[in-house]
Amino acid sequence: MKNTILTAKLPALCSLLALFILLAGCTFDYGEDISSGDSIPDLVMDNVEYVRVRSSDPIARFSAERAERYENLNLMKLINFTFEQYGEDGEEVNAYGSAGRASVDIETSNIIMDNGIRVEVESEDIIIVTEQLEWKDEERLLYTKEDSKVNILQNNGTNFIGIGLRADARKRTWAFYGEVSGTYIYDDE
Image 1: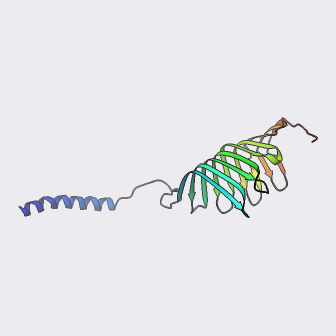
Image 2: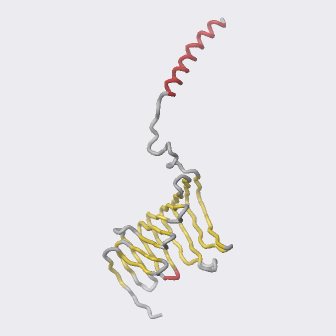
Image 3: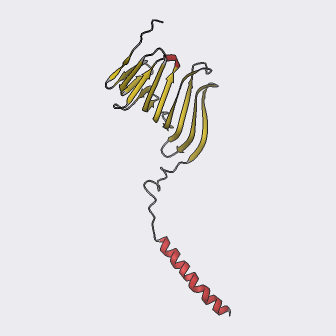
């Protein structure tokens, strides 16, 4: 009887080993870049809030519905991203904004935002509305693609719609790449 049970299990075991050897020789296509690990986030967080502090004063607050961090790419991808930038004393919010998506270069702090962007800078009384916007931190430049539609508003009724935007935060200047139209209201105050 033992011999019969052993011979009955031996073909099943041989079939299982043959299947294992066959599968070990196969390769599967999981898509591009999966093997490098670049397309799989190292860290995923939902409902994230991050406060950047300098000399015990908050300088900025970021929040996102979802954050994905990619260490090999030095990249953080954010979904439904909002931010606040504090003034010099760290108490009052000077600028705030939102975007459907954002990518942050972890090393340079450069940011690329898209999908319904709105940025408000209270100290400059300016609101920028566009679909794509980039921030170069070291150069202190804010710009769009040259063909992006941009709407710039002020509380006094000034309203410009232009193509492409480049704003230099150090020089406090901004310019459109292409056509622009709108209304400029001069306040003597």
